[in-house]
Image (cartoon, rainbow over all chains, first blue to last red; front, top):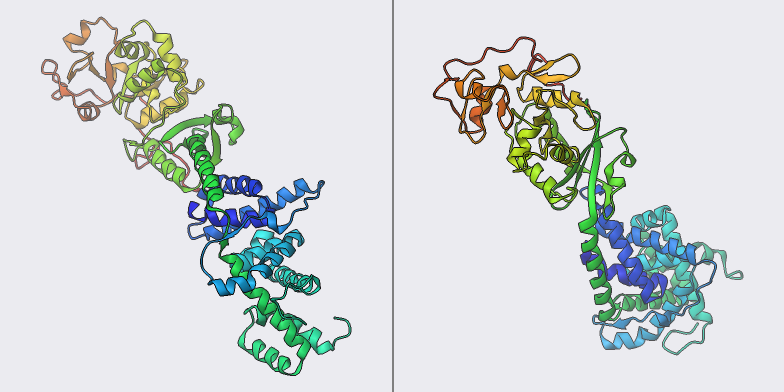
Length: 166
Length: 345
């Protein structure tokens, strides 16, 4: 179970935008999972189940925070590149990536959580729907809506040169 | 979007899906054909491709390793603490009433007869420092073994136990001595007090058994009054005691006020002896009626299963006791089934 810790932490960091909250909520996710894992069916998808717990916690967290509006920029999500994509490709998309993070952090919660689960963590729509207590189709609609908003805002934002102009 | 052709509006979702690689082949072809004709949709498609590519870049980013490691360390510490506190339990129906079985990672921690089938009726809801969670299959397996034991299909429960609910070292000593009473044998409270080296602490011994967190496993039902009366068990329920002893082959009779064992129908092991005797054996008669400290066995088989040899003076092997009339039958079923648990679960 704990092999998923880093990934859940990463998910919650994007979902909440704050390292301290990602820390707290990721711990809560695993403590809950530990209490409940005995009642899991034998072939359950543990990873998707952890995402569901983390998603529920994120939503509760936002419900609790709803009175004071959290304004945070994606830059507060201190992500650094580790490896993977080659430098050329990175330079092309790095700034676009930062701007996407900024847009994502301002998306409505369900769209944001659906988008992160789908596009960053690659979960399928059934799992995303289960985590958000909606259908797979609705989960897909959330992701698409997120992509539309990202595109629109990249289009209207100050273009920084590396993306095609329309 | 308002002033663009309706065909573009209609194809928008498919366009998005194929740009991010989530469309099937037919849709992709259909979108491709449209893109060949429509410049603005082509631009839109390219933008989604760029976004998708940038998002792939985001996937390979991760938070500073230090932050994750710190979070991980804190998690490990809290998990360790949780594991030590977490007790998995389940409540099962039985003719003894509802029984709760709870286990920790170390072993069985509590067996409890409940007034009603809810955690609120259990000690678990009142003790500090533990967290009870309802369990699935692990405890279920224990229950099946316990049922086999109660119904006489097996005579041993080899479970690891966790004695965290034992209240004191003295209680622990008493429970350890109780656990050593063989299957099918009984001893008096005063006999047990002598066994633990505190012959005058009879009441304290009874108190320790009253708080036995592991009845049946630690067979406090095998400890009886000096008179032979079964006396209090798990809150005065001598019926449970009678059922458990009957399954073990101990002759129990219904006396005027309570159940009692049929002492004259039992074989006797004198304190620290390695042989078992008839009640009429001269070495027993010399005790002038007091059986304190003696183990009483319901049958020769049980005495011998406990490693005892027949006395060479009274020869219980040659003159076995007649089966006592009036004793409770060893079972209530035609096939030797004890008053059992319902098989329908």
